Length: 242
View (cartoon, rainbow, N blue to C red):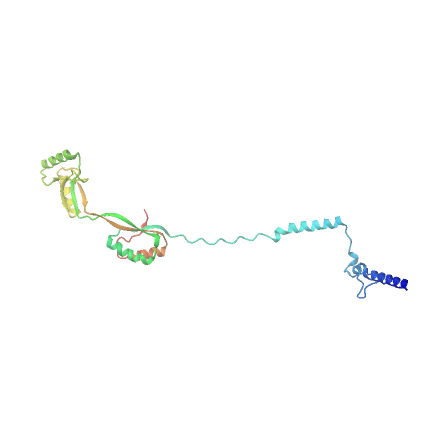
């Protein structure tokens, strides 16, 4: 009995081994390698390659792919650069000098333009002319002034005096002062006819400041608004910075 069981188990194991190896076939269809080859399309044209042949074909395919790659990946045209912002039409503009009352009015109107650091006020020395002096300039100090006075007396001129004090006109000889320049020029011409050489006319009056305005990086529309702000004032003349 024992022998029968032993041989039965051995036969069963042999059947399982043969079934696992596919030696007994497959009820769903033949799937061993010869059967799969028969199911391929154009099976008669298939050929088995050696390892060297397969490597050669792979290298040739790689070379063809490398040659075709530059054409397939041609560089795209560079994107256009963004347009640069338009440069200001006027880099630097200046007005003439305003008298203090006009300067205050002009600044009040300019404040609405909000120009900030683009607007600068400039102090301009200004002389308020109140008279015009006809004189002979200093020449040789006190002795030189006395010689000039003697020459004037010889020509019949008695309206003069020697200027003193601590000023650039110390030892000059004054010949008269007039409110208008025309009157001063008339006297200078008369003295020249009498042979008095070197007569000059000097405007005189207190020194003060007027105010000019400088604008930088101004475009056309802003320039128009600046001129509008200074409408009615003679100093509102914009010119290129000196």
